[in-house]
Image (cartoon, rainbow, N blue to C red; front, side, top):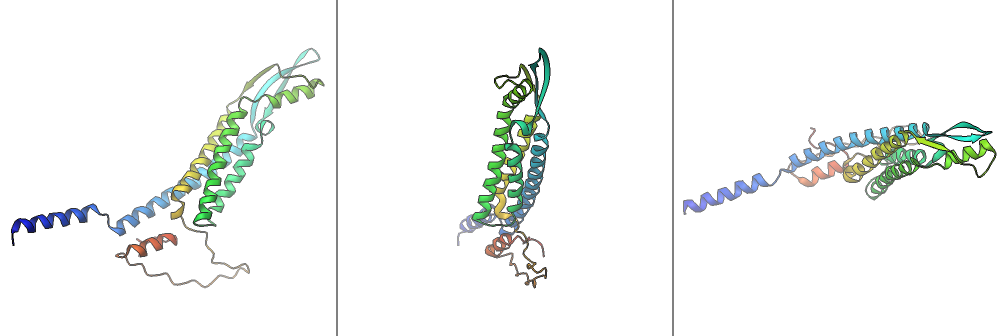
Length: 226
């Protein structure tokens, strides 16, 4: 046999083996990505909802109205301007929790709801940053003239803080859409009576069988752990 053919064949085999990732190493990479994305999604979602709710209770705008020939100071909180950011923050927080109670298509739907809640919070906060309707209503009530409007008006930075909270919710939703299929599902060990269900034996994972590794990931297990 020609030694050149043997050498060429060995070289092709070596290149193929080094180019194709080992299933076990790929599974380990997926597990690390799942853990990292899960931690970031929980952090972004919880922090974003808290920031949006807190910002809605702060002063967004202030101004003056003419009452009895004098300047009357007025101020409006975020909840006076729009209740959308606070409502969507609660929806987003509920969606973040619900992500772990469902799987497959249900998880995708809940993750999409989380992302949409964040996007809606950003839009509502930015629109409310220049809204004068809340101060106009207070000026009309203070002066007794339904046609009265605020004379001078300025805005604080809280609407943009609320928008930042919405952006964090949006990022959490995008992470759930991208990596949610790798995340674990909420444990169902306990019945409604409070008694623990009998635990099933953990299936044996063969590291040389890629289908076993992917099934373990789908169950929320770490196939690299002995």
